[in-house]
Length: 84
Image 1 (cartoon, rainbow, N blue to C red):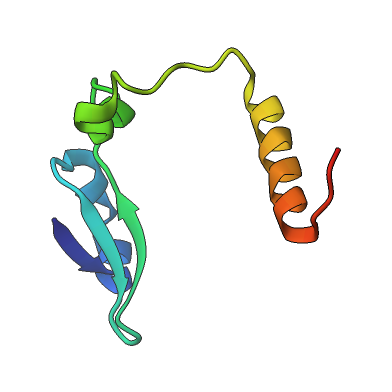
Image 2: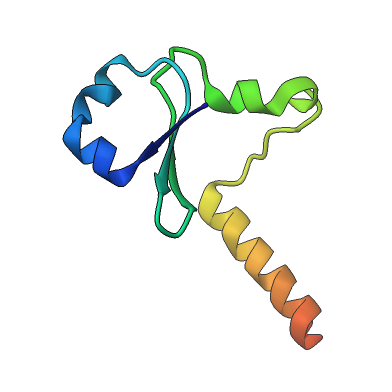
């Protein structure tokens, strides 16, 4: 993983054109990590990150909005003891 400061990035923006590995943008004064920049790949990042568990996850028939709503209701039930 490459690490680069904001000033260096501003001086040499062409770093992004030939990016081959992960680049971490760091604020050198506060020593905080501001961003991670990944190179564009043909493969799906989620498939790479899932590893050996990618076949164990069952795809859902619900869309993302339904999943968010269900998770929100579940969290509210746990927090406030409400039932729907």
